[in-house]
Figure: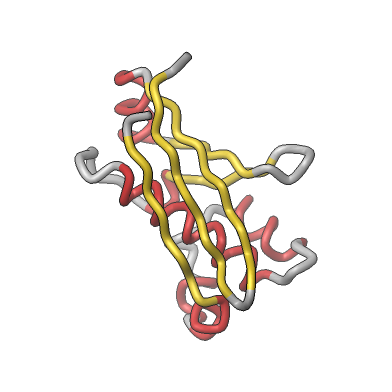
Length: 121
């Protein structure tokens, strides 16, 4: 393992930050659609996605400049999250032969995320 990052978000505080939810600056269209369809609600889902992005940025303190929408949290058929990277960040990670993996959990009004940076296997 190369590094790990962690972040926690209060779902209520996140829901009150309407600008983050609606602006298009922090989330891709696919992430917003996923949030709208989430059983737990958009604020809960997007708080987890936001925490995953924050965790990744904390795990990569030395990185090229990037925008929030260059980090996308997608979900496989079973609901497991995965990162999709774009732009300079994606090229940088690929060039280093690294992988980045998120884990997201929700409990008691909070969303917690961990991002693990590892070498390709």
